[in-house]
Image 1 (cartoon, rainbow, N blue to C red):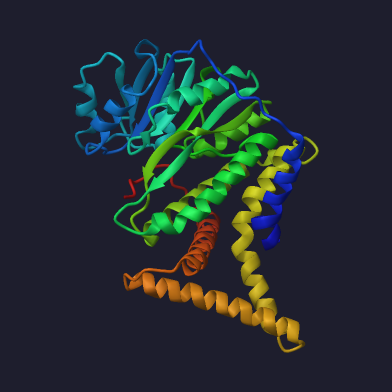
Image 2: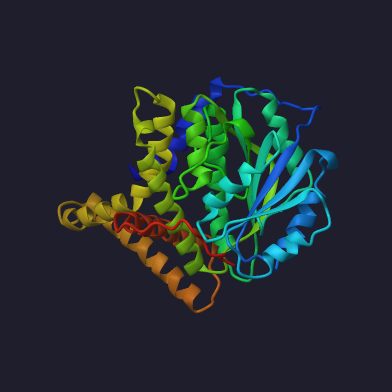
Length: 368
């Protein structure tokens, strides 16, 4: 199961995509778009974000920028209100209800045919908006996800996460070509206005929306040219917390939309959900069972003794990586991969535990 989760699924997608082709699209008649920026206490970056958004390569008379403030308690709201451009709007929640609720509110005042979602800390490539919009020429496309690029911060987590994030982006590209992406990066994605329905504030929008569209027969596709730059978490603790929160929220979405796991009604979608999400979340359980079973088997023959030694060495190297990281020392590339693989699976296990304990986190705190 571990092998299938990390290698078999991606190999199967590569094989299935040998029989599929996608034709590049272009769109000369650009629609009016509403760019919605979710923000909570972002006074440090909100002005820069609005300026950068207005400067994107897109017709100035076909865009508006809506800042959705989740009851910010700093100067975020006043900075947006004082912005001297009629295309910039502020909508504010009177109390904190979370990112999804803030976006629901902003959509209610949006005028665009296409809604583009972003975060206050995200920097779009100048042509990202045009690349996103082009894909809507295909009437079967309900949403388009861009590519999030992590930039180095004061910590080293960007290096450690880089390989696994590239791996995740490859899976998204393959899923997009095979059928539909089942998740997008919340900091850069677009959706047709008429297909956006109000979401339960407890659900994470970058997972729930693509699933809802797939249920209704629309595709969510990947546009790798639409780049968004985001600062990585400052350290392992912050990254663990972020990933655990995402896993916990993702499980909540699957539970709420569990009918999509029915292979008779949704053969392709259920295959993707089980292979990409459920098995990934259960991988740390499989790893633990594998090691425990091997402890009892290693006395019986040489093969099991060898597999036990290999596993023991693997986890010892992960522990060494954690020790060196705690001491502020660098890691070699192999050690970095082993260490971060264990970090990712620890976060997944933590996220599952948080969900079982009933923890739900609709509101968010900025992680830098």
